[in-house]
Image (cartoon, rainbow, N blue to C red):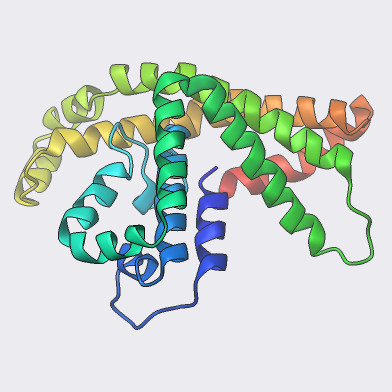
Length: 242
């Protein structure tokens, strides 16, 4: 689900000089800076995502990273936001609505990103007409999944605090020695992130995410049960390997 956030950022600005951090590149122009903050807020709204190590699921979302860069580049940010008061007010309003009405805000955000992302994907097929039914199916699914995230992820975070992996490692002296030598300040934090990732990847995704995806999108798109099963068989394993 963070794919669309990365997609927005990649379309918003060209590659900067090597070594320039993403937030700093986003701050070079007002539009880039606003888009980066907007993507950060949406990531927070969607719970935690699983794509790669930089997007590891944990109770700490990327808002902490944004706060750090805000502190380091306060002058640049002040200059950027001073020229875009309307955009800043819009972001403040979004954060306020998110805090007051988290579930509907997450669902609307997810549905919007799903429609935009599908529109970009459909635009690549020049010889096919835009399918409103397909767009609606992705929107409906993403909104439902945001609701599932809203309910299930806090439970995963609460129950997976690193005690399982930490206990397993401590029971094996060789592994315990290896991890102790890594010099991690708070290894339990990393164990918790691993547990939360595994719980989502091996629990939520295969047994809830994809079944709901295939059933809901097939129903909205008017696929028969046989067609839905065939599509699931052809795509489930390749998707799980990503």
